[in-house]
Image 1 (cartoon, helix red, strand yellow):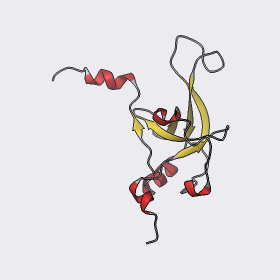
Image 2: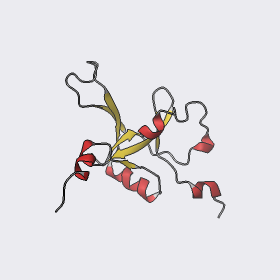
Image 3: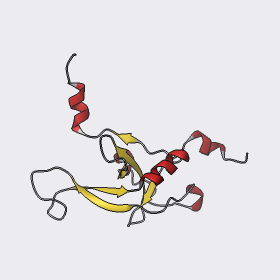
Image 4: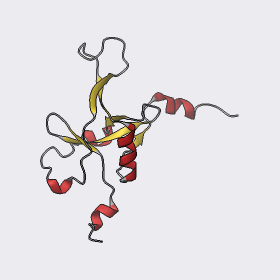
Length: 124
C-alpha cells in the first residue's frame, strides 16, 4: 500500500505552531469544553520540536483554531495582572470529528481536582 510502517506503529499527533515557531502537541482536558485544546503538559517542558521541523514530519494540516487564554484559578487578578493563564486553542466540532476519522491522537487528560475528589467518594 506504499505507507510508511513507522507511521502505522505510532499514530499522528495533533500539534500547534506557536508564535515563537515552536511546535507543541495538544490535548483535551477531562470535564472541560470538548473543542478547547491545551498544550500537553507531559511534553511541553521538553520544548517539543523547537529546533528542526521539516515537511516530512507533517502528516496533514487542519487549518486554524481560535487562540485564547484561560486564567488559572488564583486568589486574585488575571492575565495581565500577574496571574498565570493556560493557552487554549478552540476548534469547531467538525474538525474534531475529522481528527477522529483520520486517527489523529488527541489525549484527554484529567487535570482537575474533581478526579481526586471522585476517588474519595465513599462506599455505596
